[in-house]
Length: 245
Ligand code: SAH
Image 1 (cartoon, helix red, strand yellow):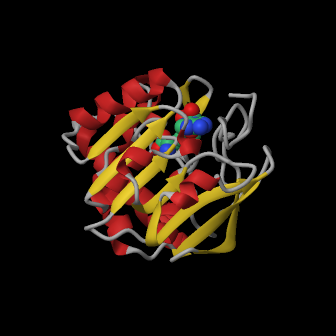
Image 2: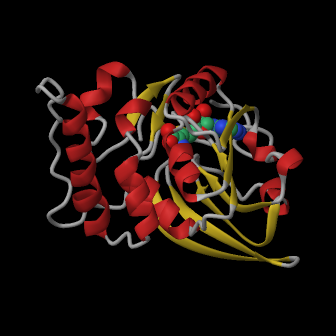
Image 3: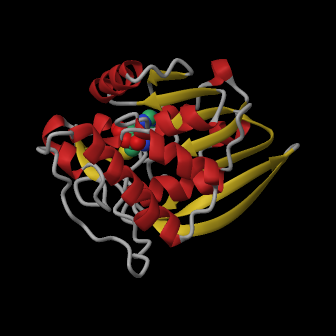
């Protein structure tokens, strides 16, 4: 994505991806958003093969419009990423769903997210896991994400400001780790902070395009496989891209 974000080079499922702004000027704007949410899940997500029912249900519940800037709310359910300020984006719904599908969360798990951005994916993780830690390097975004999550009453997600390439050792290990920005390689500290049997999902590649890499920990072994092509904003920091935000 241009000025940042993941446009999802994942192509489009046939019949999906009709893009239209959702009218919020009707007499019941809340209802219109709920309808848009169901449409998004059916046409952008389910139709393209995302199967985890818990992910689908969580996406039907979390109000995405709450995590985009007010003047972009009518576009919240479009089939693409949207700018959220500070040169960053909220990821395309399908890309978020794909990552969560691969991640495979269970209700008793703890999760770490790197790149909290708007807080949208953190809210979904909070629906899917017992406890969620989400690290964001841009302070202004972290503050907004925290406020949005608090507004919606999520008590099991904690936003932390910092360089997430170093993980968050104080609450490790994590059953699941998800990185929402593109890395040049899998950061060592994130692997180390995985619980035994844990899984890490991270886009790895060049600054311009990546593949989703899945790392499964089995004792001291880390089994890596490559999946869906994607495009994310750069993961910066000590174990990411060095000198660019
Ligand atoms: N998951 C987000 C989308 C995030 S876009 C959402 O649902 O809205 C990627 C985010 O990663 C950006 O907000 C960017 O500031 C952040 N980021 C980049 N490098 C980081 C790092 N080293 N640690 C934490 N966050 C980082």
